[in-house]
Length: 610
Ligand code: M6R
Image (cartoon, rainbow, N blue to C red; front, side, top):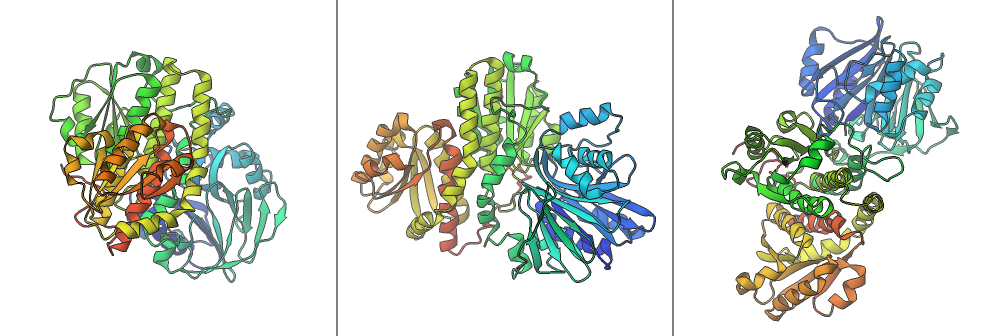
């Protein structure tokens, strides 16, 4: 999830691009770059780090010209560095490309291009596109782009320039957002509305499979096959802050709604074309090493720890290797038993959490292979780990983690399936069956988000309480731990997440008349047991909300006060759905209590102290 801006017109192009990128920095900020047509030709400036670094580079050598493209990067393929930053170019330096998204088959295409004599300088998938466009160019940039993308699989939004046709800017959208801004004698492209809001409010929204050819005076819209199309212009009345939040009231709500995309992006390129296998082309963990593993430690903090609980259970079920979960701040001080056959998985959205980093170093000191699941490819944890599985959720801004948690679950499921393939612990049919169910998750989340009002109504009901309980068994217990953390973190309502069967061993004493109890009841193998536990709290006066599958609602309503239903998937995958109403519950409860949802008191997004 990076940011794209592009301009063609009479203004100072560099200023338009830099101002646009400033508005997109929230989308990605590990490096930035621009390409501008200058009288000397297409010139590129890029720099690792925040946009300010690029600005200081340009201070002494500004790029003055009539058209350009800019990009702010959130690394996915290749660490943050000057050379991996966009725009990318071909060996002749005549073509320049900015790209959001992932080219799934970039390795195949790269090998083919290398065989044909093309030289690569970066580790990115994007560089493949610039070479492809250069290879296909026969005097018409639009045709060259169309030809190039016909070889590509995956998600991409592109801005393309060539020195041979300086009066044209080509834009493409395929499963990654892109808009066209319309001006007088000037036109713009942007991955997001804020990028161009300073200059125009008139836009076209491209759909998947569409492209645009911009000149100063015109914008032509067509399908990627070259059929011309017309589109109604939209006039945007958002202010900049609303635009940054994509029209949502808070980043947290936006990020909850970005989950279907985060699921798709995290799966993208990691599932074979026929849907039968998981592939991890970049993993250094060899098949031999996977076969030799005798234990796995999963170490993380907060929400990432909670994701590890679900991930660990999935790996145990799929691979039949013992998994131990640990809070990072405990792990390093308790002399964990690490053998050469232990895999340590550290999980961190930011990749900078001090406790998790220290645990990683402890694991390394004991000779373990450390695999990081992280959302920030250039982070300290990603750099120090032996292996990285990137969650492709894009930057998470709200302190309360949502899309990072669910994409960590997706990463764990993929890893578990991959290890099961290697160790032969699941049949090919079973693996394909789980993959197929995973591919339905994004749509299922979308359907739940459409029904958010029911959760909102319940959140408003509990917002006046100071204490409540979450209960569940098995994976439901893992998920309610995340639900409880989320609620505490932003609504400041005290809540406890309890293994439903454990309540009677002490905590049941706290259940009194009217106390809300939220019971997650999705795991069929323990359903009856959970219902018994629900009856225990009901008998003490609790007000119980059950979250369950539609098929159980009618029955459960005999024992509970209200029920919400979620779509059905495999039990192992259910956490990727059942957490969504809990995230919404926390959000709406915090809202009802008038709290600062995105910046809860006493907390920071990245905790870099132990
Ligand atoms: O960046 P990390 O995933 O390493 O952060 C770990 C925790 O600090 C984080 O998940 C925290 O618990 C969240 N704010 C919870 O929403």
